[in-house]
Length: 271
Image 1 (cartoon, rainbow, N blue to C red):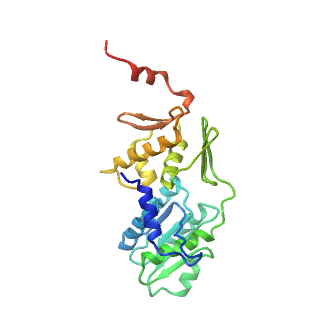
Image 2: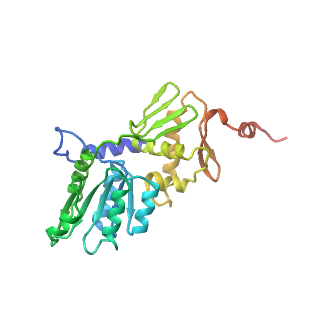
Image 3: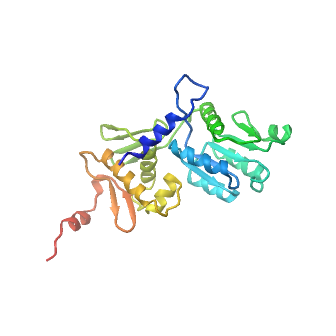
């Protein structure tokens, strides 16, 4: 079976290059991206295209949903549908909350063709961008790419350590013992989730929602597939860290604390 991330990179390479860089450069968009607004064909297609670039997409059709996404993740890039028929209630207040959620944030705002210049100037900040009238996904992707490039790098990131396994979100590096481990973006997000909740069993449905933002129905196999990818990379020739809890999900633990009861259960035979 072909690795999904290889397919994603092929789709990314097929997209038009951004005018911000040299010839042949692929689009690069910060992950995750929060899309705020009512359902629309443009938002749906943009979500699919972003996921094809291995970008995590958070969708919110209300202020409460947006706040829940902010608690679960720390998005720096927002797509805000400010068109009259799609905008959420209390949009101005919610947009302020989104901006306040991180030190550096940027929003791509979609407006109706008839929008007044004063409204645009009121809500569009220096790092932002906006589009009016017909919203095209290709142009949205290009603008998100440019916005990502303008965002300052974070001064400090998250460093997670579980046993001899270490993950750094700023440098996007993973190391176990003396060995550097190369992960795809999806594998990195999956391992980060497991490490953030080390020693806690995570159900497949929760992993699917946090890493892929998909509904659970019919998609459990992708969790199993990526668990196997990550296991092969972080456990190659080393003790196991990611454990399957049958009927419950997966848990990551330091290798040295692997319970003896599991080893006994796996080697026991009927009397």
